[in-house]
Image (cartoon, rainbow, N blue to C red; front, side, top):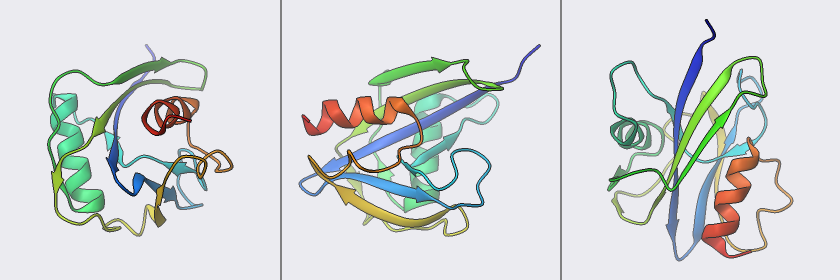
Length: 135
């Protein structure tokens, strides 16, 4: 029986663009890549609640996350299957900051035309950025 990693991510979007975090080069999954804030879903945890928890832990915001994910991807191309759910988050309280410097060594707001040259963690991140930033 293979392990399925249940992962959630949130595209925090405002007038600055979308917030991306740079994964530390020492990370196991997608080291040295830009990614959306998020993380693993704990056993018995609902994905939307997991995203609220992860956004609070990683970037210090209390996000409004409800309903189904805006993008749901199941990827079995790697050594372990990943079930990834991503939300577009347009409402939150707090100022995003890097609260997990052991996981991320930088954070950046990116707008249209600013993300295409970045090494992104997973192709679905580009798909969501393209839809949210219209290009």
